[in-house]
Length: 99
Image (cartoon, rainbow, N blue to C red; front, side, top):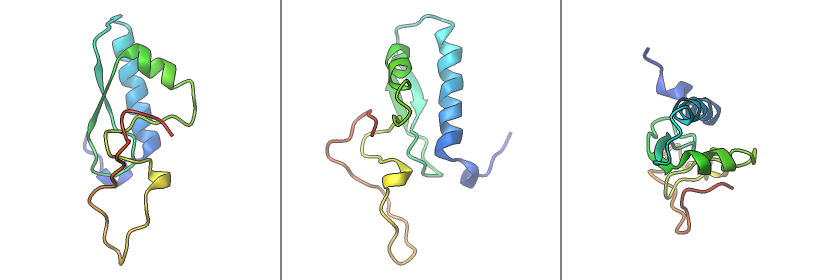
């Protein structure tokens, strides 16, 4: 299936990550899994490596999002200036973390 990248939203990416979690949870693996960054940028496919246990624990907090290093949630992204989209939003302390 081909989907327009503009249709990707943080909620859609979260549903994909939930599906990945359910699929890999059946295997009882302790190895990290590559989840998708939930920053909300239409063309972001950065992996967020987490163990299933870490993902399961974090998703108990509804405000938590899986973010690649240097990415911010869509709700916290700065407004573009003069219609130009910033290339990246840098947060020196960013890691695989929530808000």
